[in-house]
Length: 136
Image (cartoon, rainbow, N blue to C red; front, top):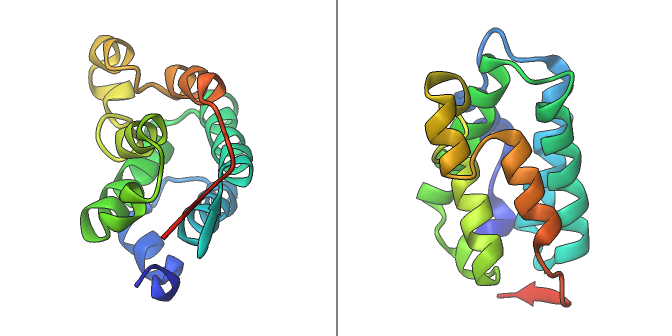
């Protein structure tokens, strides 16, 4: 179940030797917002915005993007109910964090076209409506 998900286990699997230490706190905040019993979309927006602003600025490195990509890929692949609890636009955004973010350095044009670079993901996040909360 979502409440039992262990951040540390997923992070250990996803992080790279070259990822910034500061990145862990941003990913942990996003994880907590996503795995809360009742997802508060404003809290999720804040956590994801902080993460994506870091990845768009001082944390914009290949290792950091790969670590975040791997983390969200593991999380959403193993626990599809996380995405099912979110409104459609939010599902796609969170899913793209674990699909194409690493392409930012492998194939920047593809990442931009897919809306999956940190900057494009941040733009997409800012365009999403929060409504209220999502529950499961």
